[in-house]
Length: 239
Image (cartoon, rainbow, N blue to C red):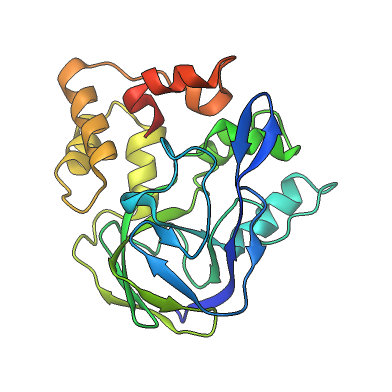
């Protein structure tokens, strides 16, 4: 694994994006150190705590390398860091190089990779494309989330290094492949279900597909609904 270079640390406040929806997509760069809690970074906010944030999605990491792809795909738009509302941007790590359950040391903090990001319809409000969430999901450039094993202060100046890898056969890219690209392939679903480091939501979704032989409806997550409250009834569809 190459040396990881942190490009920025970002937090944001929830704001109204229209249609009765809120989102903390406008993350701002923070140059001073912040306390990383088990629930998240500093005073970072989430637009909807039902589906974002929490102990299994305390920190969102997005590779800075991906922005060249988005700039080429949508050249008329500007793609600054944090365009995907990430908390942490870096070079030297991509979905292919990070595995579920990996433990990283960032300053005094210990983080564990818990799941890939599931793109949702709020990305469509970025103005790039009305189906950007679907495009992100199809591309596999989703980033990933961490749970916090040991809280503490962090900053962009701290080193970021891998200290333990327990599941080398399940990269974040492979998890996305199993979950989204070949979502009913039994061997892949079994691998997801049996990985204890993967978040409970993803393991439960994999187990449900194996049990029922049916794929859950992703339309609420990817496209949104007229009444956002209906998402509360979507359950595993919003993993």
